[in-house]
Image (cartoon, rainbow, N blue to C red; front, side, top):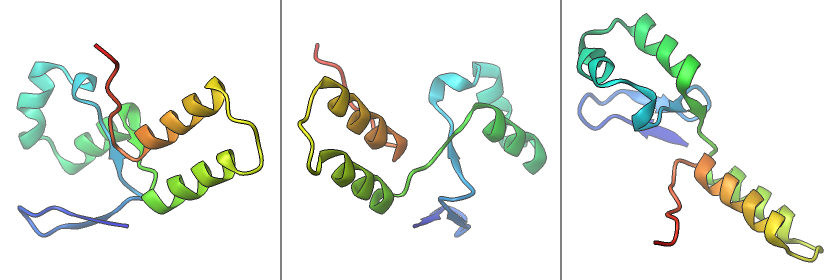
Length: 94
């Protein structure tokens, strides 16, 4: 999987990128992010980010969890974790 920054054309790859949740940075850090060095922003990513799971790997893992077993609440939670590892969010019932 490639991740392409459409504002700069920078090509990234999911194996070296992480997702940093919005709440992982303070307001001051968000404001300072544009002026941080590459090293500083990479440090934040390593400290507070989580790896991106490519869709194909997530689907393979989900298929494995569903194949030949009786599904239960734990199965659903494991699948939910795999889905969120792809960068998607799952909203709670309101």
